[in-house]
Image 1 (cartoon, rainbow, N blue to C red):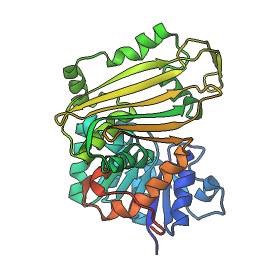
Image 2: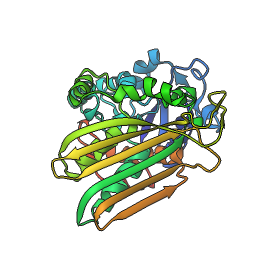
Image 3: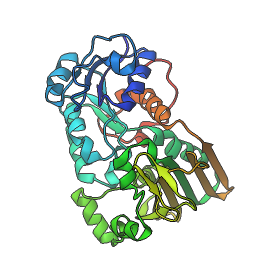
Image 4: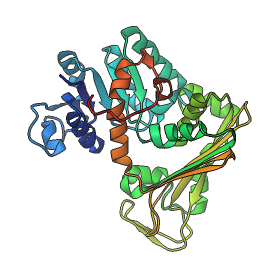
Length: 350
């Protein structure tokens, strides 16, 4: 009998995670969502397969369902901030069910929302389960970089950049990236948020009010994995522009030449060991020559650059999560970032 999995969030990502679980010999024993259009549907309909005899239940019915089916692990594919997935992860922790989430902040939430992380960690330790975050960043912004570092004699700087098309992720994300704003509007509405002192930022983090870019947590993960001590970390947002007008279907407008097509969030981390991390994620409305790209350079002896063009981010995210399942089940209890769980490897069966 394979691993029993509950799917928490039955949207776009779940079509892949659920199929991958079945293909690796596991079984989906329950599914949860908030969308009334999805609640009551058989998961086979969501996956585009034959009926599986498992219907999506509402959040209100989630606890009772999990108690009944007794899963080995839950896959949480809902939102991007730890505060948004807190209820789902706390429910798993309360019931002693391991959980892995694609939430980007959950990759290393202790450096952006320590209070929520500590709360989940405490409960998970009491009930003996493991909670973690994984996905695309586990390999492409994490393990690949630490592996290259392992073949480097001395490091001065680690530079990273990853780009994505905001058109693929809906209007809320596009607007959050400042797409369609004039440069003056961008400065007022987007960039000004990061013009705060280190003390103000730390106070926001302690209150759980800080909004980290994806790389904020990645830098924390990399420093922990490489044994580096963080001295300071800051984030700035820089508008992206294009020389011609670009049509945005997601925004339903033409982004004028020179206006913001989106933004780059640049996170700079200084460490006690003298190694600087400078990483950025670039989200914008793509021109015809743009494509997704992941590029990292380690500067030192020697210099090494790694470029991955056109990565299939959704599939890579979902495969990473499913391949992680056995690692999470056998890990120590608590909130455990994957840098503590060990390197991710391909699994034939889960």
